[in-house]
Amino acid sequence: MSLHVERITSHVGDVGGIPIQRALPNKGRRVIGAWCFADHAGPATLPPERRMNVGPHPHTGLSTFSWMIEGEILHRDSLGSEQVLRAGQVNLMTAGHGISHSEESLTDRIHLAQLWIALPDAERERAPSFQHFPDLPRCGVGGFEGTVLVGELAGQRSPVPSFTPLLGVDLVADGPADAVLALQPAFEHGFMLLEGAVEVAPTGHDAVETVEPGTLLYVGPGCPSVELRCSAAARLLLLGGTPWPQPPLLWWNFVGREPAEMAAWAQDWAREDGGRFGGVQGYAGPRIVVPPVPPLRKPEPV
Image 1: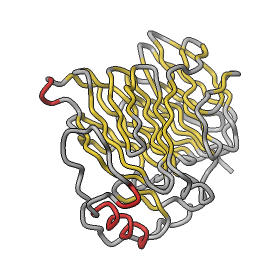
Image 2: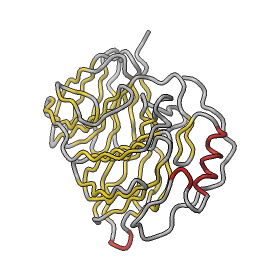
Image 3: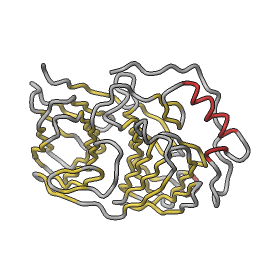
């Protein structure tokens, strides 16, 4: 059986005043392992009056994973957490049963990856939690400097926990670089370009794929290694995980399984007290209003 490789073009949009490119979910590919949402926000420099400002909003059934590349963001949530996220750091907020939060830029310059991790059935109703990780392990790989965000690569393991087998690595080259990375063949992987251009040559694939910002290269299970080459400075995220046979249902800020869940959660957030999601203290401004729930159906099994 040949290795499955596909190119995914990101959707372009705006979140809180910051330009974003959204690689997941996509019409052709909804998840990579438990990674069910992948935004590349920025890089952007905005005047103080237009800094990113995302008012209180709810989440269920997921962990939000924020990897800061440039700038600073203030996180507040309904648990009472108040944490500044700085460059080189990760915030992990596990919504579980339900949580609400706000995000405010403290700097004009902003560049980050905002990712969601779907929780497995046994964990999606767990109590919410928030964790901050100021120090992450690094490794050199053939001219690329890697920061291991979650999982393990080149003998380095991230302290960031996960409820399913996952991999997340930020790979940066300051100039020409060539590296061969050993991969977990049981994983599916995604190569998400943030800056520059990188040639990706997965073992078992008969072509070399050049990927640039706005493109994610999906590589299916069965790939033992990949060669990465660039002729100038570049940055990419490597995402991986065990395939999910049944992709979760995503709508608005919720990750669930059934359409009826979404309607119930929307009604909860519409309550004055926020229902199961609670409220965010210290944020100066209104919370985000839940939109009307459209007709929804469960995604088809992969």
